[in-house]
Amino acid sequence: MKLFYGSSPKWEQSSLSNPFRLLFICLTALLIVAVSFPKIIHAAQITLEWDAVNHPLLEGYVVYYGTYSGDYDVSLDVGNWTSCTIADLEEDETYYFAVTAYSTEGEESDFSNEVSHSSSNSSNDSYDVGIGGGCFIATAADG
Image (cartoon, one colour):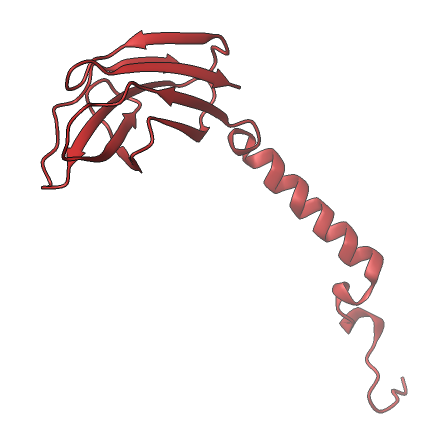
């Protein structure tokens, strides 16, 4: 078998040299990733709202949440906002939420009353949670 300089037999050619084969491989990989991570594609979100705390040294609020009651593995400093939307919640999971207020001197209030919401429930719910003179958290879920 005679080979020309710079050429290689067909069996040595890269499978990526054919543009159709490369496209097929990329689309297959994308499909595998999409099927492997369905919770990312169908993530839920929730909007929390609460009444402002009336205190001259109020600096802001921290929203805490997690999947176990009283055990919040995520904290989110929302500044002076009295609402926030939390996205990328897993479907069919119950989340527990509480809010604290913090002052310019670094003091943080006790947790508000805890509210829970299942991301599989797409109805709008409201809860009284009370922090520092009455904080109200209303939740609206989008699934």
